[in-house]
Image (tube, rainbow, N blue to C red; front, side, top):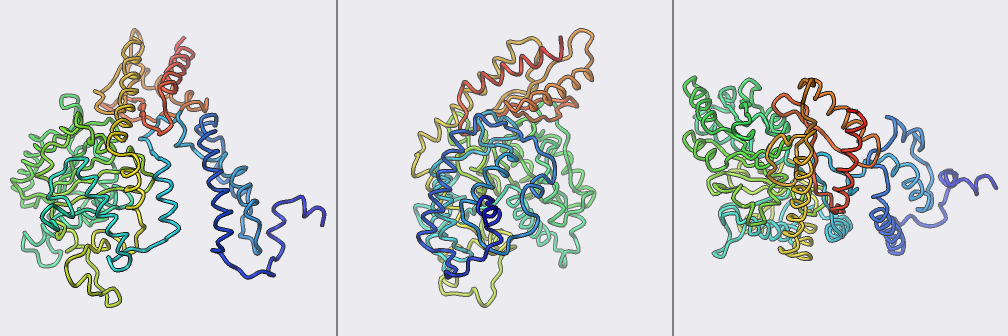
Length: 510
């Protein structure tokens, strides 16, 4: 028995059936969560010193942990030890202040607490009656956020005069927001064209700039649109890679003349690749000529629009049909939290409603409540509204605006560093807290040589574990993306990253 006593994994082989199984024993809940909270606090204290990217190979975890589930129980301390020794070393640390890749995945103490409490309550709020407070909280949080964004009251669930015609729902991701609005737009276009069932589906067309997130094109396929009718409209430096309304009009008119039915256009505020901004108002004006559904994807940059100096990027939003933004990207609310607003909630629920006998109830029949199951793909749903409300209630508008402005200021500082070094160029204008830059082709260096130099620079930077950057392609050129916004980031981290970039560049170019 001595060897078993010294081997934590051995506990999994020992039966512990003397006590009754109580998975929610109050003392266990308290003890386990105290240990989990200590782990989280220690993690945030130490994450800065951890390599941002792990040095592991595919399948490593199955080699370290048992490939089969244990038969018998083990002390929670054993589970936590394996978390520390096997899982954490294989994590890419999105919480690290040295993480500058993709877009930030922000978090906060209030959001973590809200998510923890929601998980503990574990409500499944598919209807208002299934959990009135969960629905009411989601509605309230969405309306609060709508006010911070200064959205028209037509997008709110509740207005000063009572229940509005619009409304919102919290979904998991932007992909879901696009999918459900595509389905609603599809059904509206089929009705408008007089289609018998889905007979006219092959005639429906959808539109977006070539900078639009790839998830849009995936959602179009899921919604049944013919891939041949998905228009990816080329953009260029003349519009800073935003959608050109003139091109949109020409393509929609050509489709109409060919007997097709323009159905949906996605405008983006802050594209993933370069943070380009499509002109929302101008796109809406073109779409109105063809009675086309307009959706605005503001997943990342929508959070910035709580600051008055960035709100102009949403000008014209009163003329669109839907808009989504993701507080889990830049508004300190942990995954998953995508807020979708629609100007006419019935157009969404008419396409997504389910009403089985076992879910029928007086509250739903009264028409006075929102059943959020009818605004999403599935039926079951998490209590996501709690963490969003806790973030806004705890920090207030002023602190949230301060958070956005601080990130933008650090990004501007980095942009100034790049512009001051004649080895580099800023490729596209910086709209928010993303800087797209590259080693520029000079002297005998060709553009292809510069592409390779930038590729090597990124690889060498990321190998150090001291910073993590991602790339994109803009105007056929390989470009590095430096995204400021990790919740723990301070000016010193941006300065250190720039010093590392300069040093690494010198090592590969000298």
